Image 1 (spheres, each protein chain N blue to C red):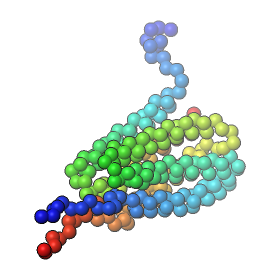
Image 2: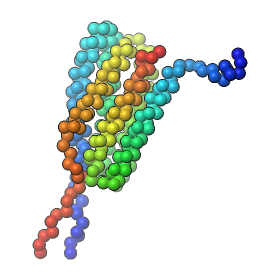
Image 3: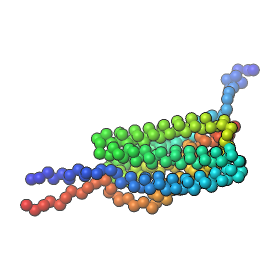
Length: 160
Length: 77
């Protein structure tokens, strides 16, 4: 009588990884487009400070929105470990917390900077956040995820 | 200045309260999203991959409001 339990699959990486990676890539592509558009608009309407505001605003939006997906990807590297659940939520939520602290510090630091236009910065940040959400929804809507994803079926018993 | 005025006196920028609210809302939202994801994975571990994607999109929408709310510091004086 052999061991009837299914063998542990060699690779237990959750199937969400390709979706998150695709979202990061497409988010980066769209961010580049928005960066150019908002930089041109900022330069036209507010001069050099507008250009800096647009560049920093769009970059902040995309980087901070992308950190969630990146932190899930990093956390999934621990998927084989016994501590996976704890490590996963520790990394994802800890990353979230640190991200918001950094964001608030950046906002306070940049508020009184005279070399950038804060209105342009705010508008391009909102545009970057909305664009990032659109990319996320499109990537998830187009993704193909199997219902039962992270299991390996036991092999058929062999005849002796 | 009478006692009521002194008690009700408020120093500083009232918008600060708004930044606090912009942090509380998403904190509750992300707490619910993550808590429900834990429940789902505990019930059906084989769905972990799907649930992670759904959790991520839920967090993305919740934190978008937080970013915009806190960034209003740039435009509100």
